[in-house]
Amino acid sequence: MMFSDEISTRYFDIWLIIAAAAAIAAAAYGVYCHIILRKNMKKLDKMLDKAIDGSFTESIFDESELSYLESKLWKYLSSSEISARKANEEKAKIKMLIADISHQTKTPVSNIQLYSELLSESELSEEQKEYAGRISSQTEKLAFLITSLVKLSRLETGIISLLPKENNIAPMLQDIVSQARAKAEEKGLYLTLECGSEKAVFDKKWTNEAIWNIVDNALKYTETGGVKIKVKEYEMFVCIDISDTGCGIEEAEQAQIFSRFYRSERTASEEGIGIGLYLARQIVSAENGYIKVSSEIGKGSNFSVFLSKL
Image 1 (tube, rainbow, N blue to C red):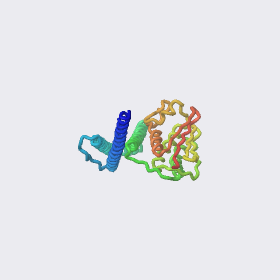
Image 2 (tube, helix red, strand yellow):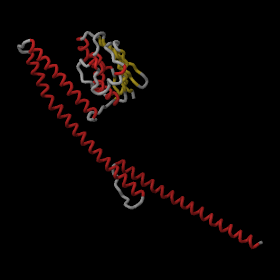
Image 3 (cartoon, rainbow, N blue to C red):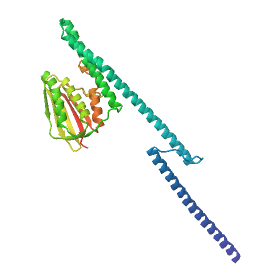
Image 4 (tube, helix red, strand yellow):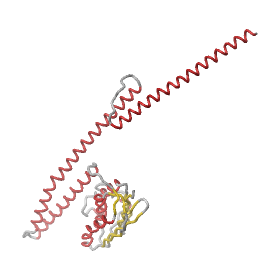
């Protein structure tokens, strides 16, 4: 009986030794895996740092997973670099094309306009004067179309970049009202401005273009009454309300009027090509602002331009 107990004790001791050895081996393996993991994480961190600063190249050439990952990262960065280079090349081509269009069309259009004006000053019959007037009108429309398309292309391709910074709103709106005054008086419309010392973050030149497009549209589609521009200040934004007493916009069309080249059937007879409001929204959106519209048929429209204060 004592012999049996002695054997059992020996087996128990052996199992204890085996269990302790297994535990030590597991702990050692855990430490080893942790060291390898930390080593690989450091290598990955260095790889990403080099990828960010553009100096990454393959350095591990074996059958390990890290080498495979490094190879895939190199292929990805190479393809991204090629794509970026191709995009820049296409952008340069577009820039050159736009410059060529702008340059090559400017002189012919100006000459047509000049000759049509000289022709209208000559001794002509009433019919001939009418034709000369139409040539002049269509030339102005063509010049406007070319200028608008060039602006649109430059803005969409990023050739022109906006530089928003904090500015007073009043000088910009006063300039717009001054430009639009003659058109308002010609149609017998009022044009008023209510503005204080409000400031917002915007690009002077391009925001002037955006607001002018909205004011010009308001005057174009208003026959009686007029246009009122009013500035309101909120915590995060400054709102420029442009209200008219014109024909109004149907509810179903209010989401479409900011689309490129959109023209309502009701206003198709008016001059324009349908990119003024599209340009306005693109410009204001690029400055972290937005535009809202509310309108009622026969009672006019109100465009609210929200410019960020941050």
